[in-house]
Length: 185
Image 1 (cartoon, helix red, strand yellow):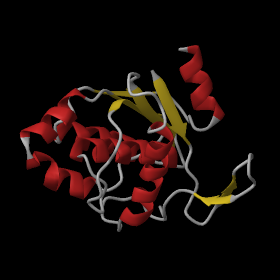
Image 2: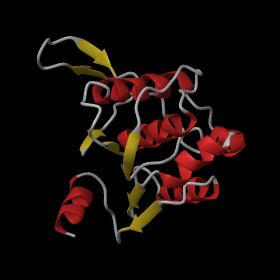
Image 3: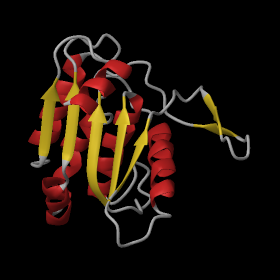
Image 4: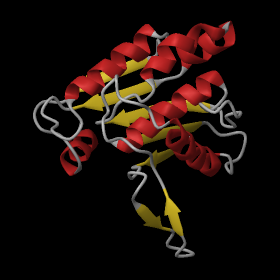
């Protein structure tokens, strides 16, 4: 199984492709991650498309997963919803069949859209029910508040994602601390 892990940057950040030294804009605007904040669907679609493009080059006979940390987790969870709906937010087809999703210290963007649209078809509901998702978050996280991770798990579960596991880790766990705890667990 191939799992692509993304640690997305804000839409204003620029990453350099080490092979070609070409600027690549990654990420989406996440100034406010509350449920009432506007969602940057265009930026989320671009982030999910970047991940899907990387995964689409893999052989068809392997299982594909996506995971991320912080904004990368938000991208992974958004990619999960694109997989379930078989399309991006802009309605273009989503080309990848995901087998698993991991989100560390992140949140679910576009949660209002998910709750309102998931019951579109039996096929959509079946994809949601069978997609394994692991979410982990630390209650002491001061960057992405724990309540956002916990609420994301609740929303996904109530929307029909039945194969979801949420794990909380004690204390302030972000960046290297969280990764160390997971590797040692």
